[in-house]
Length: 435
Ligand SMILES: *Cc1c(COP(=O)(O)O)cnc(C)c1O
Image (cartoon, rainbow, N blue to C red; front, side):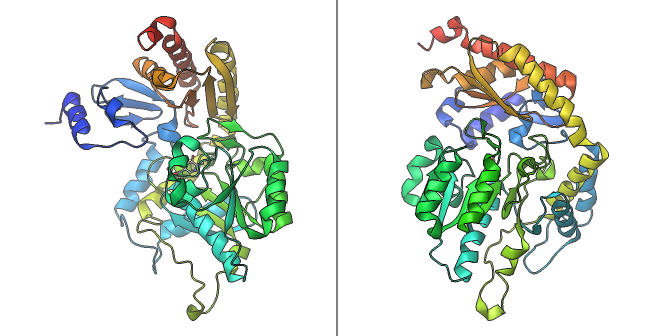
């Protein structure tokens, strides 16, 4: 007998602790139990359907239960679910690495796997520092990140994070990092002029700072950052955990400014949003800095147990196959244009909306500010849920990030629901009970 939705929800409230969630509020709401999905639709345990408006937290690409990806995982499951990359290798890891290098910006020649975006970034940070150290410049231990940046939740990735709400509390646990003004190349120049000889790398989310609320950089900024890194002899780490795999309209955001980073960090969309996997791509120059005799100890002493998991790699290969077979990047251009029109028509004119920011499919709808206890972003998501769409806010920014596979009619429905949800949540009577 399958358990009822109510029974599952009660059990959730008894035993779970959810990420980025105030559990006190959680236990006052009825948790939505998602049981299955297909394409861009999720179904809850009661059988109600919801559009997946944020790609299951920014990772789904070709839709859920895509037959090609399902089959690839099942086929790999018939061989082996997990072995190790420590001292061994396996076909899916090799093939996916070849495929990633073939589509990545020119100059990236090596793939180091891990299993989430935070670790993909930490690996780049550690490699950058170790590379300089092994050249004798051990004093290059500093990093530069951007204000309001987000690179993950582990201590190293939080150290290069710039979101006060998430990161400030942990300051005593973190290594010191310089924070540059996003989009302002002169500010980065100032920091590098002052501290450049002690810096190992600059880390950025190219084009769009996602968790900051879809903060957009001005055109030319990424290119300028690349040139400054070259001028001061520091590495550039591009965190494409969110922007990668077509989300901004090109396979990788870096391409739009013709930039090859020294480290390209990938996760989220790499398996189409199916399984945990991440990759840190780097250059031959970085790789060669780690070569030496066994007893030189230039080894990169880092590796997670599930690094390069075969099922996840099989999903990754199938995800890239689908990009080719369905000409996803070509077709998504229409989806992106349509999304822009729909937002202009239904969302931008709403009195509650302060600004709509978007690059490709990555959309942030900033509302006029409300007092914190109102939890306006959250209210909007509850209204959207009642109308059949799952979205998740960042404070007062309502995020839309549909899967690349979302159809025109689904997209129309998603934007219409979002507009209605914003109107309903910001209507005066709804606010009266909080004020
Ligand atoms: C989500 C995200 C991360 C963290 O990835 P996890 O897999 O959650 O650890 C890092 N950087 C960016 C830009 C992200 O959006």
